Length: 146
Length: 146
View (cartoon, chains in turn orange, yellow):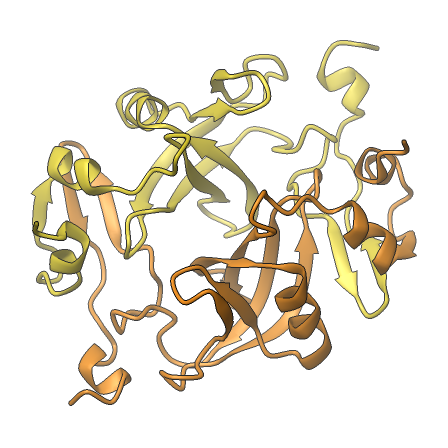
């Protein structure tokens, strides 16, 4: 069997390959999911990590609006459908062995359900964890509970 | 049971919490692993995603040299031990639900085993995948096979 990602390692810079062939070789896990990292396209801030199945990825590529798979709800999750804080896709890339996605996005407001811009706010410093950012929006407001 | 990460969502900005308590509540998966995203600290480039168990994380925090868990080799993997391309830790953070790590690193040379700076070089564009970067170093040289 040809290992598509091994072949791509040696492929010419800027060469193009059929998307279907690449996605057929992509390594979704036993649950059919792959981690997807969302990075704000202009500032470089890493906003969150969530999961996509092939359907979520195809919808995201087709519509330009980021759609994940919610493991807790067991269904497609169009980011912002309840909070209003959408992610619009600017670019997507698979990694060298085809098991992780990096999404360049334009995030409206906070990406995090806590109301913070980024989910990565629990800084590990020495023998302590420090809360490294404050909410932009009260999360009770974000989900219409206020 | 108190959900530590739910409590941290509402904790004051800049407040500090015992590292052990936070790591006890962190959500490693069924294999005891957690995804760790490595980002070059000054340029913001996302370099790679790999996995850490608690031991790898503690070693990384203690030594400042990034250590992952190699799923293929089933052992600790001190990044750069065979390629020479080390990662030095600048900062580490957990996300809001304690199941993903973001590492700010200083990466020597290429992070990717293909010789590229970043692993995320298979750009998904329309109906094609495009090779979006070229190796900095011939991978045969990188692993001493040349």
